[in-house]
Length: 366
Image 1 (cartoon, rainbow, N blue to C red):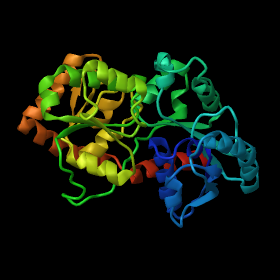
Image 2: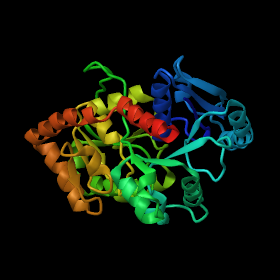
Image 3: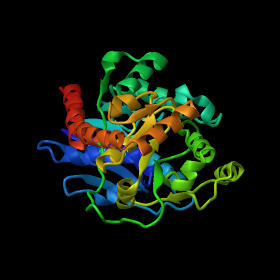
């Protein structure tokens, strides 16, 4: 069985959850006897591909993510990838994002993963010219089979785009971060609440800022740390100033998995206030480092965290503050969440994700 993954997400993301998902899939499936797996991305900016194993063939070259790099890579890859696919003739192409362009050779099967329906559910958070929904619909129509990463995403896909449920399989994601010794990377300084990922629109980071600003006891005893998502924008800094939050109280970090793992390990609490997620890996990552989790009860998040997190209504500042306060001040609750988290994460692994995805491939090719 010859499986190919296309260039799309490896052109867009240097790091990031979707590129991690496809790298882990490709790497795990490549180790299965009888599977020949390649990633075809003539030019890419993605860092995960530089760590590929001897089992996985990556056809392409990494370029630095400098200005215009993504545009240049996309143009080159759109031209070269269909030619490479036609030469290699894979049995199945798993497209790594949404595109109106087909790259699979004639006769080859196409699988598409739909991660969420955020653009369709919350169009107000995106620019008027954003073409994601249009290209997603075309890609869905082209696909022979669709993988959804949660039951919630499957339900939304069927309801919003009227996709045949028989064409969809739900496969939960896995997660992985480096294992650290207990005291490695420990930093001095004040305790902190941790937020991870992008902060725009539906991610609801502003709600967390408002709650932090409104509770002087929280500001007195804890900092707020954000990881990833780019440096704080001028608008975010202006909002912090307007709310009376000092820039020394809200810190931003970016970097690789080791840094993120250390931040989880040392955080007093992980907060995930998103209005909508197709899955939500960060809460599982936090649980893997015994970090208590407070998160939104919206969309797929309860499906992922089960009873191992303190849930709140993301549209209510009072509910968010109440959950934070309970977990910070109730040691029994904190330890209960930690113990439940250790059990919860056993249900999610990249090995399980790869095995179930490979089953989809086999059924499609049988």
